[in-house]
Amino acid sequence: MSQKNLYSTFSILNSQFSILNSQFSILNSQFSIPHSPFHARQNSHSLTDGGS
Image 1: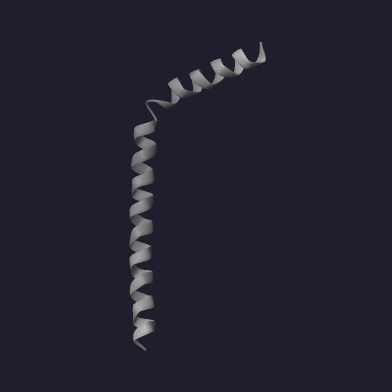
Image 2: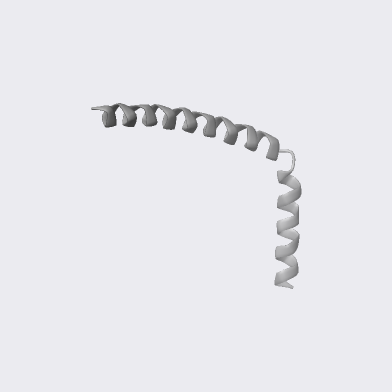
């Protein structure tokens, strides 16, 4: 009985963490947006260097 209670508590905690995780990933994507054109330009540049 107590083991079942423990499991439900962990599942509640787990769902809370997954909510937090999605919040952090949203924040992370918002922060990485300004840098993405620079990274894309860098990647394409190194790609052309490798090709030539």
